[in-house]
Every structure is written in structure tokens, then in C-alpha cells.
Amino acid sequence: MERPFLFVREGMVIQHIRDIKLMQKRSLEIRQHGKSIGFVPTMGYFHDGHIELMKYVRNRCDLVIVSIFVNAIQFGPNEDFQKYPRDIDRDLKFVKQAGVDIVFNPEHKDMYPDNFQTGVSVGKVTKYLCGASRPGHFNGVTTIVSKLFNIVKPDIAVFGEKDFQQLVTIKQMVTDLNMSVTVIGRPIVRETDGLAMSSRNIYLSVEERKAALGLKKSIELAKRMVSMNENDCKKIIHAVKNELLSKSCIKIDYVQLCDTETLEPVEKIKQKTLLALAVFIGSTRLIDNCILDFGV
Ligand code: PAF
Image (cartoon, rainbow, N blue to C red):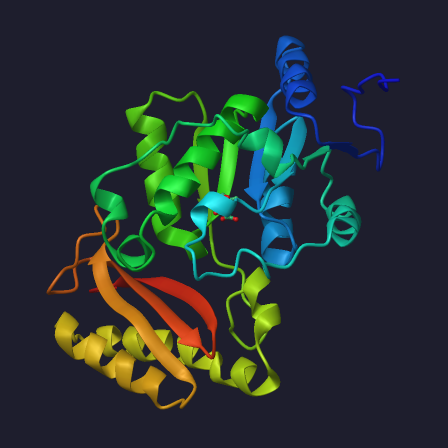
């Protein structure tokens, strides 16, 4: 028997919905009652970065919906889809502290039935950075996010800025396809020692965890160089790479300085320039970034 739906938040009542049609029905009802929906799409295995996103929408919308779906089609053949951490019971406990109303956790077979044939693909902004090293990744992301937007019908959707290119890509998709959702990026949440929070940090051994601090250290180095008026991107990239490579278990995927909107590589630091990093620490791929502000 279907439980009656509560439009007024009642303490800690969280609905866990797996069925796509039911989720669509709920979202329609919420909107028909004039209530706003804030949405946080995730692949689960929550950390405080996710919780910050949930709290952010909690303060702005009537209902908070979080999706948990490890999206197979955004992983490459040799990537970590199989071992990506999954623990729905842990996640359901975690979301209580964030005032979430509905957790939408569909099944792969329902999201991608046998006859599934459609993909959403964004152009230029997906060609650089992770788009270059992970072919097909962003098509997988934009396809699933479009599906989730159609199912959840959010007024606002928030994404972490750690996946800066993902955020830019989704904003581009929403603009190009006239989707009626406002996409908001939120700052990176870091551990106290500076490592950007990520569900993948759990893969790191003790040694690798120490080495991972090289990411933050190299970002700080770049910031220092820019604060001392260095604006030559080649020099900054060289210094950042050297800092990263001082840790023996780090392999660089890319270090790039680029325009914050088009993501095209730049040669001189402008007023705002994105420093984007991707490295392998052992077999774990981590990304990080910051905006460098020249002349500030
Ligand atoms: O950032 C993520 O967790 C995923 O890429 C997203 C946006 C949930 C799509 O699967």
C-alpha cells in the first residue's frame, strides 16, 4: 500500500523511492501543490561534501530530493564502476542529518532498459580535461542527468565544484536544451588537512592518502606564484607538475590552466583562470581544482 505523501515536513520522515513512475508522480504532486523541489544528484557513498549540497537546498526549497545511482554509462571499460563504493543503508542514515525528504534510488535495469537508445551529448566544453582523458564520460553524465531532471522535475539542482567541468557541461546542456532548472555550483569541501572530499578517497592506502596531499600543496604553490605576479601558464604548470611528481606514487593525468567558462587552455593567467588537476595515486584517479585570481 502506498503511503500518503506529506507535503509538510514532519521531522525525520524520509521516503526511499526506487520506482521511476512513482518518483515522477511524487514530483508532479509536489509541483502541483506549488512547492519547490531542490535536487542533489549523486552516486551515493556520502561524505560531508554531499551533505553540504543537501543542506544548501534544504534552506532554499520546500522539498529536498537526493538521487543515488551509480551510472554505469559514465564509466570507461577500465574504470572503477564495479568497485565504486555502494552502501545504501549508510547513505540513508547520513541523509537524516541533512533534512532530505526523498531519496530516489532507481535500478540500472529500469534506467537503462534493453531497448534504451538515446544519448545527450554536449560539444566543445567536454573536449578538454576529463573529457579528453575519459572518452564518453560526459555523454554518460549528461544523459543520466537529463533523465534525472525529467523524472525529479527540480526547480534547482546543485553540483559540487570539484567536478568543475561537469558543472560547466550541465549548465551548457540546460541552456542549450531550454531545461527549466537552475543549476548551482557549490565550493569544494575539504578534509581538515586539505584533501578534497571524494567518495573515491576510501580507495587510498595510508601512504597514498599522505601522497594525495600533493594535490592541495600544488594548488597552494600555484596560488603563491600568481600572488607574486607570475602569469605565464607554462611556468605555473611546470611548477605544479614538479610538486606533484615529488610524491613517487603520483602519476599525472593532466595539469591545465583554462578559461573558467569555455574551458579552453590559456597561455597567460587572466583575472580568473581555472587550474584543473587530475592524477592517479596508485590506481585511484583523483581530481581537484581552484580558481586563480590574477591581480587580486
Ligand atoms: O557527480 C556525480 O556524482 C555524478 O557524475 C552525477 C552528477 C550524479 C551523474 O551520475
